Every structure is written in C-alpha cells, then in structure tokens.
Image (cartoon, rainbow, N blue to C red; front, side, top):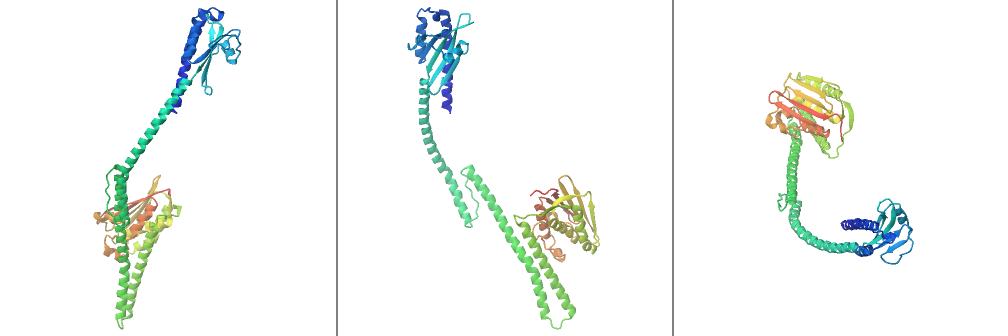
Length: 440
C-alpha cells in the first residue's frame, strides 16, 4: 500500500514537471513563430531533446488541425481532429495517466503573443516505465526485507516464548500439586504476568482455606446444635424409664420438657433449611410491589402477644407511605427476626420502636430496643451462623443462633444493607436499607 502510494506520487510529480516544460516550450513556440513556418532550428532541437528526456513523443498541431511536427517523423502532414485537440483549441488543456498503457498524455494550447487566441496544440505522450521499474525494484527489495524480518521475528518469538513458558510451567506444576491437595502458596516472580497469576492464585487459595474452615466450623456447629436437644430428650426419657411408680405430674412435666426439646430441634432444622435455600447461587426472589407500611404493621400485630407477656411497649412510626419491590415472604421473615430478637433480649417493661422512612432510591427500616445491648468487640460477629452473644440466655429464649444470619442473607438478596449500632446496657439499633426498585 505504501509503495502503491509512492508510485502515484512519482507519476503526479512527473506530470507536473512535464506540464512545466511544455508550458515553457509553448511560450517559445509563440515567440519564434514556428507554427507560421519561421524556424531557426532551435525549436526542433528543443523538441527532440524534450522527447528524449521524457521518453515520449511530441506532436505540434496547427490551427488547420495539420500535424506540423512529429518527433517520431511518422504523422507529419496528417490531420489530428481528436476530442482532446478540439477541447484544447477552446483553451482546455488535458493531462491524464493510463495505467493500462503506462503512458502520460497531455494536450497543451499554444497561444499567440497577445495570449488572446489559440494558434496551435502541443500533444505530448510520455512513458512511465522508468518509474514503474523503479517501484518494482522497491517491491522486490521490500519482499526480501520482509522475508528477513519474518525470519528474525520467528527466532525472536521462539526465544521469547521459551523465556515466557519457563515460569508458566512452574506455575502449572504448582497448580497440579494443588489439584492433589497440596494447597501451598505459589511464588514465581520471574515476570510481571506470572507474578499476577501467582497473586490471584494465592488470593483464591486464602479464600478457599477460609471457606473450608467456615464449612468445618458450620458442620461442627450444626452437629452440636442438633445433638443438644436429642441428648436432652434421651436424658429425660431415660429418667422416666428408670423411675418406678412416679406420680403422673412428674410424667407430664418430663413429657412437656421433651416436647419443648422437639420443638427446638424442629426450629433449628427449619432455620437450617431456610439458610440452605438462601445460599443457593441461583436463588430467585418472588418480587412484587408491596406496601411496606402494611407489612410492618402485620409483623408487629403477630408479635404483640410476645411483647405483652413482659409488658414491653411495641411502637411503630411511619413517616410516609412506602411501596417497594420485594419478596414479601422473605422480607417478612427478616423483619420478624429483628423485632423478635428485640423483644426476647429486652428488659421487662422495656420498649421496642420500629420506624419506616424512604427517599427517592431506598426505604429504611429501623428497629430500636431498650434491651441489654451488644458488646462492641463482638458486634461484627452477630450475623455469623450459630453465633450467640449470651449462649445461656439464647437457649432459654429458644434462640438457634441463625436468625440474624437469615436476616442478613435476605437483605443481601434484595441488594440491601444492614447495620448495627449498640452500646452494652443501653440497647441496640438495627438499620436496614433496601432499594425501592429491585434490579435482578
């Protein structure tokens, strides 16, 4: 493409040069009166030299369309009534290049001394073979240079690939070891690329180890939580079987305790099933437009009997009507867990305030209580599964340690956020922020 452009430039340059020479010759013809039959030999010599220099042919056509001069001495005395000659007598010059014949053809008008009338036409043809041969030579040399560059590039690419593949092979060996359980950090810092791969792998390895530890801890916690009620049931049952002639009141008390433990076991299993469903990566919410005001009022109506048992005041504050796109069942579960915890871990004759507000993007639910509060050093753990601030108190109130974990998962599924503000002995405040419009 570059050489093609160079050929065009060379031809255009030759056309400009030839036009300049022909215009100069045209003025000489006018002054010498050559077309009127006056000649001192200078013009013929100039025409001959010019045609030789530009490897071409020059015809001089008079006003009668007779060819007065042909540098090839072939068509002298003949007529030339071509279209280009006719146009040239009207003052229109022509310069064009024929790629097929590889020749430049020009028609130049010859004016009288007053420059008022065209007295003749100069028809010039010139070969561009020398230019094309030169460009072809460039093509040949460029082809040789391309081959040399290609060979050099192949050798350079080969040695570079060897240099690059060596550290990548070391990374590959380390990954193969990891596939067989050898989860050790990899450090192949031979180049920036391998270092980045190693850093990404090491980060992934850290996450995998954390996930594995979390899984083991979760399995251990599940086993412990499920085993505890079963152990209690077994102890109670063994005690009943070992007693002879026990009063019926004692039987009823033991059976009531067994029933409570069964309920507790059922609650733990239900909560675990809820967590498993929420943990699914393809979990879909059944999103509908719901009045958040009505949802909160319904939750508080269900929990008022629980609050009334301990004379806890349950207050709902709504600053404006709020309509949000949510999964009503799941968000009801999350809010119920928050309000129920605020009641259970409160002081007798205390209070729980639930408030609702919104802006143009989010709605906000705030649950405040006058309860025991949560120590600052454990506040970042309360959303972990099976974590309890006060284990003895949690079991007394029937807590499984999964409520806040479920709440956190539900809010995350809604692309929301939950924050805790608490001071030990002064109560806690949970603030939930959820988008008004759900975007999947």
